[in-house]
Length: 103
Length: 268
Length: 153
Image (tube, rainbow over the protein chains, first blue to last red):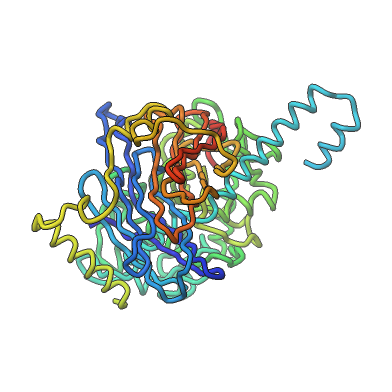
C-alpha cells in the first residue's frame, strides 16, 4: 500500500488553505539505473481533492511534477471542522486517499 | 554583502564589482529559492514513517524501539539528538545517533547486525527504515540548542580523533575535510562551503542535517553526508556506523554547540 | 490507533476492494480525462491545440511566480494564479522539457484560481501559466534559470 500523504488545512477568514505533501517517486521513465537499464515511468496521474464530499480540485499530473509532490490551493467558504480528503491515482493503478480536518 | 555594494558604488572598480555583485545576487536568488521550498518539506513524510517504525513491534523479540535510550533515559527523545554523540556506560564507548539506533535494533529487537544496518541509504524503490527513524528521532530535538559534552575522557578522545581526521590529508587528491571546510566565504560553483572552524558556520551546517536532499530525493543523515564527503575527496568508502565517522561527527557536533537544532531540513 | 487513521484505512480498503473487484476503475471514479496527447505536446502552442483551444494571449490577469534561479532543476516551486473571471482551468508548462505540460488543474466554483506546486526543469527555460477563462486561453510566462551547484551542503 502506498505511503500516507500529509495534509494540512487551515482557515484564514473564509478561505481554507490546503497543503498536501505526497510520497511518490514520480519517475519520468527517462532515467537509467547504474546498469544502464531504463527505470520505468511511475508517476501520479490524477488527483482529486474534496471538502465535505464536494470536489474542490481536480488535477492531472505528468511525470515532470517533482518527486514527493507538494501541492497547495485555497477553497472559499470552508469552515473549521470541515473534512478535506485527497485521492491520487498513479500510472500503475496504485492509489492513496488521506483525510484531514480543517483547523 | 551591504558593504560590498557600498564599496562597489564608491570606487571605480567596475568589472570586478559587477562580477562580485552578480555572484552575490545569485546567492540572494538561491536564498529566495530555498525560502520558497521551506514550506512543505518532504522530510515530514520520512518523519511520519519513522514514528510508525519507532512504535512498531519488530525483530525476533517482537518489541518496539520505544525503550531505546539515547542518553536521556529509555524512550526519551526530546532533545536527545542535541546531546549526541555521547559516551554510553552500557557499551563503554562513544556512540552517535545511528550507532546507538543500530545497537537498540539489535539488543531490544534482536536483529542481527546485518539486518540492523540494512539499507542505510535509501534509493528509488528501496526505502531506508534507518533514514525514516533518524528523521523522526532528530525531529524531536527541533528547537533545542546543541549541547554536546566532552566531559568524559572518551568523549574528549573522540573529539580529538575527529579533529585529527578533519585535518588528515589523503586520497587521490590529497584532500582533507579542512581543504574545503577550514576557511570562510569559500564556495564550489554556487555551493557555499561552511567553515567548520567558525562557530556560526559550524552551527548553521550541523543543525540542518539530516535533510531531504532534493538532488537525491531522499532524507540524508550525517552518516550519508560524511560518506558522500569521503567519496568527493576520493577517500576509500567508510563503513556505515564506523567509529571514524562518529569521531568526525563528534568534532562537528561539539563545534556547533549553542546552535539551535533545526532539522530535518531541506537541501539541494 | 486513532480514529483518523481508522478512517483513512477504511476508505482506502473500501476503494481498494471496489477497484480489485473491477467495479470501479480508478480513472472512472475521479478526475478529468488524462490525455496522453496533452502530456506529449512539445510546446505551449501544441498543448493548447490538444486541449481544444486554438490561440492564446498574454494576459496581465494571469500570474506566475517562481525563483529566478533554481538551485536544483529537480524541484522548482511554481505558483500560478488568475484574476480573470470564470477561470475554470489552469496549467503549468515548461517550454524546454521533453514534454511541455507539467500539471493541469480543473478549478470548480468556490476554489480560488491559484495553485502552487513543484516541477522538474531539465534546463533553463520559460515556464508558462496557461489559463482558460470564459472559454478564452490566457498565458503568463517567466524565465527560470537552472544552475548546477557544487557538492551539495
